[in-house]
Length: 112
Image (cartoon, rainbow, N blue to C red; front, side, top):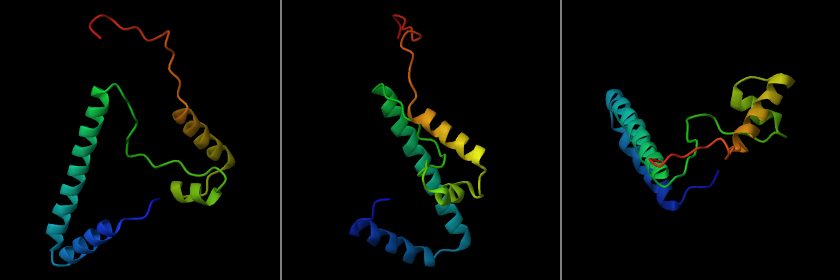
């Protein structure tokens, strides 16, 4: 993960100071509003991509981890997976990352 800029660190410190003065209810409302804004931003991003003919999976799933590091997978899943579960996880990750389109199956009509 990339490090924060000085400006981002300052803003986080400022948010921390402001949050100390808020009530529990105000904190919950601010958190819900932040998630709402995140979802709106994500929807706008996906809409712009779609308008440009691009499509990315920006779901809330957990990111892929290093297959050579069993600890990171266990941390990601929250438990120590079996060898079969580990293999299934990485096969699905590879399939998602290397998805191929069958251009012969895509048929565009004049309306498209």
